[in-house]
Amino acid sequence: MDTTIAGITRYLGQDVDALNVASQNIANLRTPGYRAQKLMPDFHNALAGPQVRLDMGNGALEQTGRPLDVALQGPGFFTVDAGGSTLLLRAGQLGIDSQGRLVDPAGHPVLGQSGSITLGPSARIRADGTVIDGGRVVDRLRIVEVAQPEQLHDLGGGLYAYAGPTQDWNGTLHVGALEQSNVDPGNEMVRLMEITRHAQSLQHAMEAYDQVLQAGINHIGENG
Image (cartoon, rainbow, N blue to C red; front, side, top):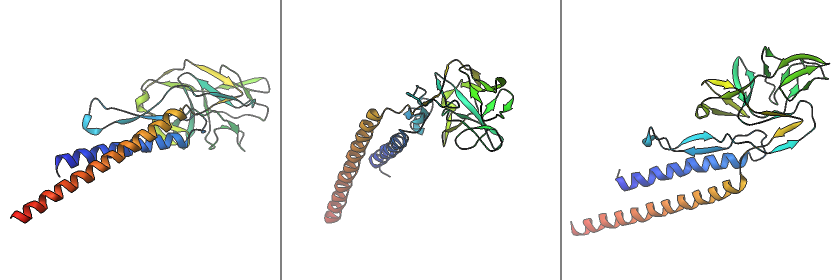
């Protein structure tokens, strides 16, 4: 393939990736705890192109008054048990399932320092993460801070896989509130328009180059 066409094709591929990231962010504007995605250059492997990273900034707080709604500010994630695997969760819209377990919106058991947490209907959570049931301390939420955010992988549904090291959580827990998505809608819309225009210009450049190439081939044929 001609190097010019190959270069344009590569840039078009990067624009498609960027459009997918921007579209994903816009689709999750109202998803509690959603971490905005962004494309970052891979300085260790330039040929691989930009890599998807998560924006670790805080989202806005929405007060709900529900005793099991909790919101993190600062770095940190709740932990849940998903079929025997420990996954991370930023959204704190918690509840109690039919077995009395503290669970996330998808029904995954939320983990404390001693494992899953079983509660009664009067349970509440303190600002230090302690879980109280009828005046009795049951456990404390297991909240972790990731040491290598670039190793986080978005699994969808608000869950993140992470195989890197963790460290002591150093943040603030707000009870009776939910953290909203940290996507900046204005920036994402501007970015979406910029990427679309850039992709269109590349497509036009490819079409123009193809026409020039075809004209050259025809000229050679006429004089052959």
